[in-house]
Figure 1 (tube, rainbow, N blue to C red):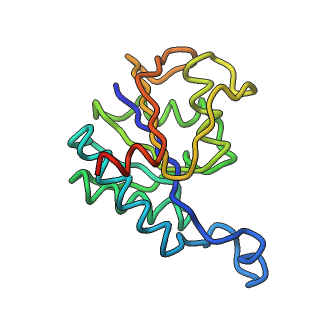
Figure 2 (cartoon, rainbow, N blue to C red):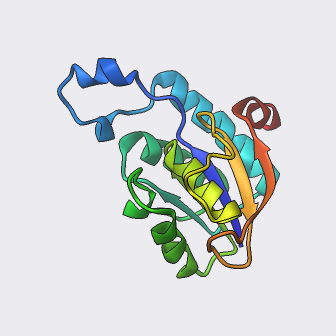
Length: 165
């Protein structure tokens, strides 16, 4: 199984958004964020061509990024609460184990994605071994999504994905 982690593209400033009184989960991508998400998705599509599924956190900025990626890759899009920042890596791995796809793209938030990546690679979610920039993609390969089961294949910062597009 290939698991591609994609952090959401740039969203509005947290403090500025908080002044609106609306929850952080509704904070959308900025205009530049949507542009960067399109560029990253195009680069990712050139690199991997397709995916069996794009799964996203239900938060607005992740959903917007995931929608753009799903369209670029011609992949179905699903929303899952397993990609919410407070969920455990084990619960996400359990959900992933129930999927049929060989290549899944997960769109979510930091530091949650880094904790999941660390757990899949080392068995520990307390150590951050990698951090994802906004609109960065990282590929892990594994036979089954489980603790200490995955190997890092590549990690591409947003500037490289943009160049690929």
